[in-house]
Image (cartoon, rainbow over all chains, first blue to last red; front, side, top):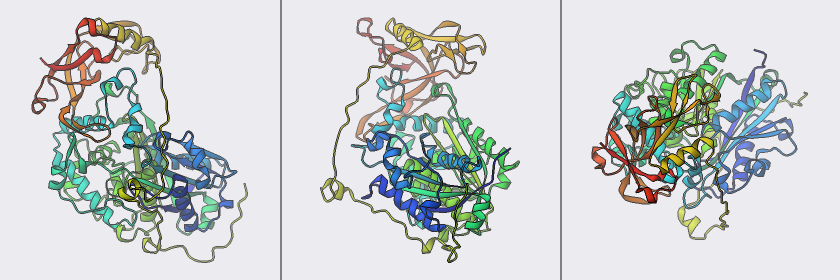
Length: 387
Length: 181
């Protein structure tokens, strides 16, 4: 197809915290500034800016993308904000990719920010209007319901236990101990997860990622420019995105088809025929522990219902054959919605360059995949990066 | 487009350990105890939603104590919630399709918290219920009731428990919940 090669050449992020002193604009600045410093570019060398952030309702600011734009370095530049729910953090770099791949720009700064803490008494309030106003909202739903319904269906269909799923929380929270930005890296046991407070059975407190504030940024460049900026460009090899129907009660929630479609699109573009052999690191979306498993299956990285076995046998451990969420994921690093997805791209960038420090996976990985998901179990967004 | 790049004065940062990450965590105490300045506000937004062509009829039928779907001749699906167009075939649906007020639990949860994380003594029991008379897999979200939470199962047959006719108002809550048959 007629598009140009695009590389990630720099990355930056803030710490993920429950509530930050910094405003969304300030968090965006810190991440953007760090990303630019990492590749020694200045803002005047950035030709376009894309920005991702979840609902305006978190901040109570109409058009928060425009409000925060100065922190993303967008002053007097072509600028565009995207929002596809939880999928935003992996969709925004795709948007940045086509800014450069199209030939319109040689550089693009991609910034994802989320500040969930202003929304009182609980940011879940901002999500409640996702349910249909006539047929669902009168029943008094809360967002946990859809995850619990999906998790239960997934468990039922394959005979998967809560303990199977708890392994993911144990792994990711432990991995996060090595992430300098992590909010809740810690050692927990399967029993700790099982004994944590039941919120919406089968979902328990430790099955869930926290509420967070934070920001991430990456710098994209066209091939020719990237090679002048760095000796270690990390290339976009494939991108994919897909949206399922909003009639979520008419779908079998045991399997995320939209993720499969997005993955197939990305694999085709990357020329990947056997993803299980050709993807070295995976950062699937893990706002809940079961979602990591659900998404590994949707990404065709294991057979349906078999993801728990990969976790049990250590394949997905940081030193396993296919490390999954070596960052610590949303379960450990934190879940500032849009920023959490871009954190996964930052992780791949550092891992593929061998710069991930204590988190570095062995074996000089060549290719990684990041994926996010969102809405009423609707959207799948996938990026494959390689060096 | 041209882009000016200067020669890089030095090699890039070589790893995590040399990086400095910004961001200042506030404790709950600092936030709520007034140690940092915050400003509060409550935007006032109110709406009056139109039910629409398909759901409008659905609500009228609920008031009469009935469930109804729509049929698409092209894909042969009987759909609920009903729609005036088929999202698969992207054409108008062809007929109204009366449904039963019974079904099967496709999935469920036992929810012990409110949306703002207040604890509930007795769990709410949201479920997706596949409605009898609609195509396989066609469910709606509703609540379960008159059942011990420990006994709820996927695959359980359930029946709608309606409000008395004079209390029904044309709303999804005209069905109080579904109970085991």
